[in-house]
Image (cartoon, rainbow, N blue to C red):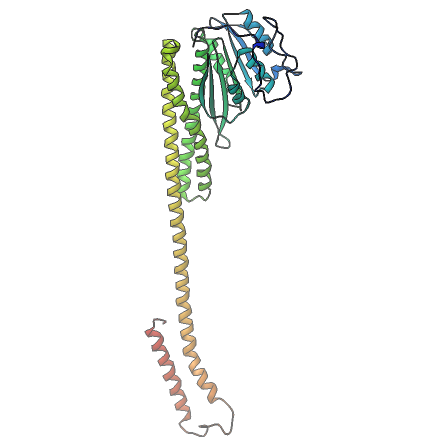
Amino acid sequence: MADRRARPAPTARKHAWRRTTQPPAAPPSTDARPAGPAKATARDDADSVVQAALYRDGVRVATPASLADTYRELREQPDGMAWIGLARPTEQELLSLAAEFDLHELAVEDAMEAHQRPKLERYGETLFVVLRAARYLDAPEEVDFGELHVFVGPDFVITVRHGAAPDLSGVRRRMEETPDLLKLGPEAVLYAILDAVVDGYAPVVSGVQNDIDEIETEVFRGDPEASRRIYELSREMVEFQRATRPLVGMLHALMAGFAKYGTDEELQRYLRDVADHVTHTSERVDGFRQALADILTVNATLVTQQQNAEMRALAEAGFEQNEEIKKISSWAAILFAPTLVGTIYGMNFETMPELKWAAGYPFAILLMAVVCVSLYFMFKRRDWL
């Protein structure tokens, strides 16, 4: 990071880019060193400030209660560093920070809205970093994503958090417990934040791996809900990939500027370690997406095989049923022949032919036998019987 610069007075900057048409509650004074850049609003800005602290030589020297107090304390500590953490801040608070620390309007506009892609941009002496944090929720077995915007200047670090993740209280506590690292300045804080976000990916990777193992079991067990779980997890892996893959390029860009911006050698080693972890995580996520695609293909194949087996079973049942119908129909036809002959000869008419014929009865019996045997052999030849 470049050497410390003198921050301009808040009045030196005109915010024509402000999206709101309402001016601040009170315009900044034209004095050389005003009491504050602009009064926040009627409400206390501590509602969004998770924590603000001033550090000197790696040790906390002040814990301001509001943004205005932070500005004043930092002016009184010219060799100090401010670390301001905000969660879902208001637009007015971000405009106040922009005026005090001379933040670029494009970066501030990005910080006002979530759903930004991970990126690293440099505006003069200020770095603007967007990170996508992730955490694994055990109960619903899903991945929850948060967004973190970080402004890193010569004497300040501002974090703007959208979402529950990541929890930066542990990062602050870790840095305060290692003053030798914290005294390296804002870049050391940026490293700690990057390290915390990347370390937060490890439980997600473990949870996703467990989910994939469960899905594989469900697929081969024939669970009908497997397809839905594969689809939902695939969507989460797309988001996870969008969060991790850009980090690889971002960290390499940081490492490329080590010599130009005089980054401490120990800090360089730490950042290389984070880059290695990010690369490993990104490769695991790519592997998860490929594994889910393969599982989906296998599941579709198994479902198709199951459907074919069911259709084959139905066809076999229909064939067997058809064979039974053939047999029943054949015997019905055979039995119908003597019934027909007997019915004709059973008519009670005086003038009916052959009633007085002595050979009529044997002839009728013979006729019935001939018809029945003929029908039997005909059906037998056709495999109906």
